Amino acid sequence: MNTQKRLSELFKEWQKECEKTDEYGTYFAPDGIIHDVQEYERMPKKVLFLLKEPHGHPGDIFSWIWNKKELYQGQLFKNLAYWLYGLLHVENGKTIPFDKLNLEAVVEFAVKTPFAFVNAKKHFGGAVCDDGKLQEYILQYEEFLAKEIEILNPHIIVCCGTPQNEFVYRLFKDKDNTIDKENVLQYDKATKRVSIYSYHPSARSSYEEMYSNMMVQYEKFLAKYPD
Image (cartoon, rainbow, N blue to C red; front, side):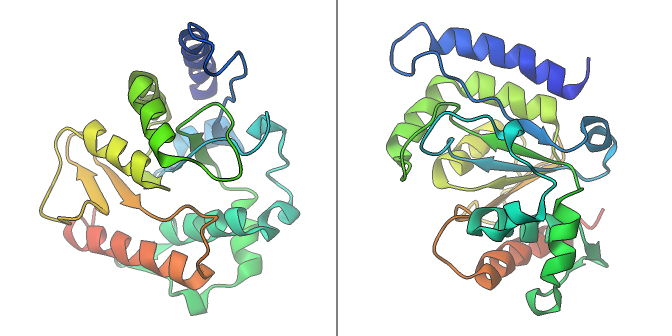
């Protein structure tokens, strides 16, 4: 059973648990691997973006046309494309400076490179996500979210918000606390997974700032764990 099929089985259990109350209703938004599943499974470095919740209305991310360049014209997806490109293009422990990036090449890379797209909350919210409610949801269904992460088996987790970063702090059992005392950067020696905390990709900040802040953290990790 491949990764996406295992996720489908998990989501069935997760949805049944949600349906025990009327709080969220029957709608449940699946997520997981973007592009080719088998290629994702073979990747030497897998990236998972841990976002907040589906926005505004019911929707399935797999109905989006991920291999169309037009998708990456908006702020959220353009930031994801920059991050994916930067995290997967490292030479001698250094990432590519923002002013050396070519947006066309970045988008070309994003439309064909597999990655994991995960919403911590599987039920849609409004225009602005309430972090308090998101935190409550994560705590309630933390076991399921942890299983999803385990199935996707990423090497890098990008935590796009505080509740998600706090979840990963609890998830990592053998943390190296010497890298970053603020937990912006976390490393689990048991699973060899690193997480990087960031503003949500739709935050009002420049692309250069969003990209550079993340790459600074990643280089900090690579300096201590070059392998």
